[in-house]
Image (tube, rainbow, N blue to C red; front, side, top):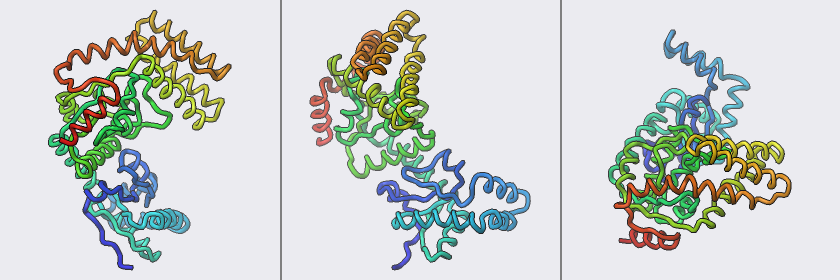
Length: 367
């Protein structure tokens, strides 16, 4: 079977979710990599640090010699085994390092010595990152956007998934975008978020076309910041305002923030620790908006929340959560949202329930 050539076709890599093996050190990977990339380092953080010092003090040849000393014997065999597994599982993938230079070529050579011919990404991480930054800015300028807005609890993210050409910013940021929005798994780094957003924009442009549907978000989704250029385009785009009766909104909030999070914490931490961490998650989220709620309103809602948690712990019944949820919606989130919407009335293109929004967006995408 002929060997595959190295590639600089970055667009194809991201459009097709091509498997990528990142041979940079774990500390580099944690700062940012690409959607679906797997870290299988040539050197660990300490080895990389020592080789870097040697390179500065004694030059490339000595640094290479030290690298071979540090990564040899059983350590080299373990690293090579990880690469073998990746290449076997992902025969259509590529490997990369920071610039597509020494580390990726050395990894490639070690694989060849093991009779595995595996291509690399020329230019490495640096070139792919530059490609995504430039692509994101270009697509933000050239794309059309439609923004899905609506009061808290209307199920915007659920409806967004039914719209043509959606990009789920909260999904990419792994955060629901409010005080209660954190998930049991951590958010991506800012660079990972930007890379994932760029890849999603590329797919939306090349695979689907037409206006991109986004959920109305503030500058920060948790700790992930939207590009300022995207915020500016979103602030000018037509609005779809999703309406739902308050009873339905309370049900959706309970499903997402009580039912699902109870399950997620239990799966992550076990029943007992999971329950304690879930309880702390809810109470801490309410406490974070204490100043904005005011002391009396915060105290009343906290009492309702503690009562609902106690009932849930004793009986498993979660219906008592409806009281604090409805109170929080009507006394806090709704007035805040209604004020914000009043500043955007001229941009409202359609308003109604999920079917109305979906039908309008579908018609628009077809014109």
